Length: 314
Image (cartoon, rainbow, N blue to C red; front, side, top):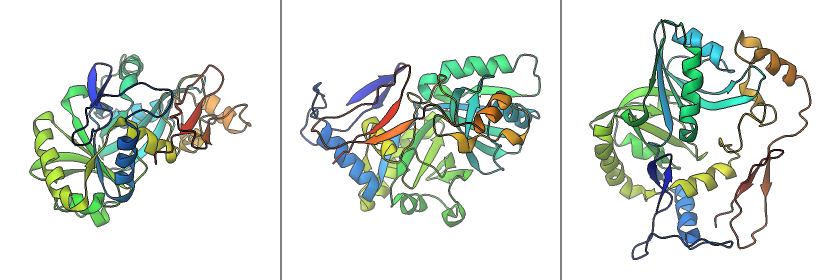
């Protein structure tokens, strides 16, 4: 069952054999509930495979790349071969973005974020690049496609397809790795909150990597999962999304204060972030665990409050 995100189709959930991939709108549990629950259980207990090409992807390079990014982002930059989570603030200290920042080489970075905010973020990036000659910014949009594997068997699955030593590839590592016969960029991270890897390849290699993963994953009970299961899993881990993290709030209200480093040096929003760091936030993002009401609650941000509500999927 497909949905769309800014013109790009992506899988919401996968129908069982003989089931029509159609969803009937309901204020109670929809006919998709059992399938989404099974996808969540597969990721928790086995291994799941999700396409993540709809994530936003940017490449920043050049001799001035590190200094430019350091001024743009509120967290310290990662070491080469590592990743960090980094908020991006406006001058008032409010959230403009929530990124995973990967450093492949000293002056080569990849940034991953919300696909729905890509145009918004590109405008901000380009404004900050006016007059800058030593930084190259590329929006990789359709030039880089991705697959994510997640679950307790994810490492064993990837081990079958690469010669890279995954025992030495710790959480938040990032490297250029061959997966099957395809050159890939691989990050040891997953938005599901489970052990996982994000595998990024040029479009010509996507099908080959997908076939390699599904064939090798059969012995581990690999199952495809979609955006509905991803939302359920990331809520259960307390991971926020751009719908609940946006410019109405500063990072300490959104539970992202640990990723803001006011003492690291000058960056956009530093003064406001330093002031907010020493204050008690007047409102904060919370997570509600609700009793099973036979319905599927959905998060609904308003102009005053935003709550991440956990969907207990089976």
